[in-house]
Image 1 (tube, helix red, strand yellow):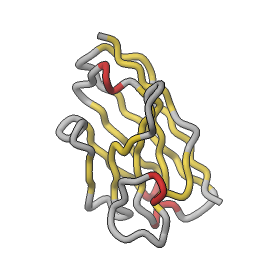
Image 2 (image 1 turned 90 degrees about the vertical axis):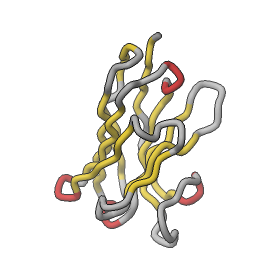
Image 3 (image 1 turned 60 degrees about the horizontal axis):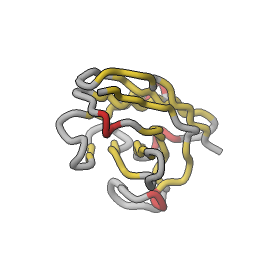
Image 4 (image 1 turned 180 degrees about the vertical axis):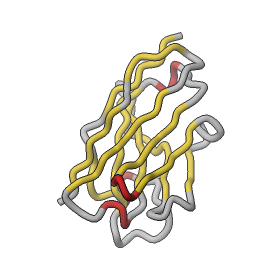
Length: 126
């Protein structure tokens, strides 16, 4: 059983930056692609970014492309999401997740992920 714990969320002004971290324990999460999702109040959870197990490949939602960067340090079992030029519409709870081991490529849909963290709140003020 993989356990994921996110941190790094907080309140930031528009145009500011935050770096989220996701630490995995209890399994071999560093062998799988890791995704970031977010859920705003009253909205469905949506894909943000995914990074391959090696860190060599990434994919982003159009809404964050050019502003967010996913990275990972497998030696630390940690995945990061650097968020720059934040906008009020980025306000949400952000979740990390491990991609299922039977999914090929970089998944962008919720069902393609097996384990989820508890989330960390990001609030961007205008």
